[in-house]
Length: 135
Image (cartoon, rainbow, N blue to C red; front, side):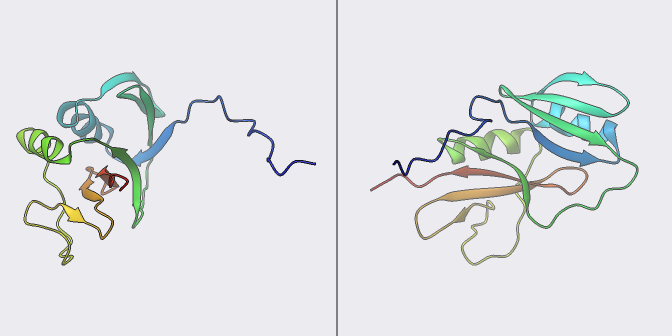
């Protein structure tokens, strides 16, 4: 008898991120123009991005209520470099007024993880994190 659970039937599948918009043009300008992702497809139902090799499907809706939590996130090796590059493109991290968030919008957690939050034009919350290095 083994305690190893069976492999997931999705183990070899590629994950797709989903987000929603009510203004596809403004959304495309942000994700393509400011974040620099390539548009793979744009039709009546969705805008599909190639987000650094990962597909993100932005569903075109009549109504959308943004969530109060992060819906898309990226892990990076050098958050300071990413923040500087984003600011050059006109994208500034969101300030929430947390005591662990600095003037640049970088939140530093007790374990050393550093993170910023961004909002897209539909107020979807995005995050970029530099995970703490194991000690």
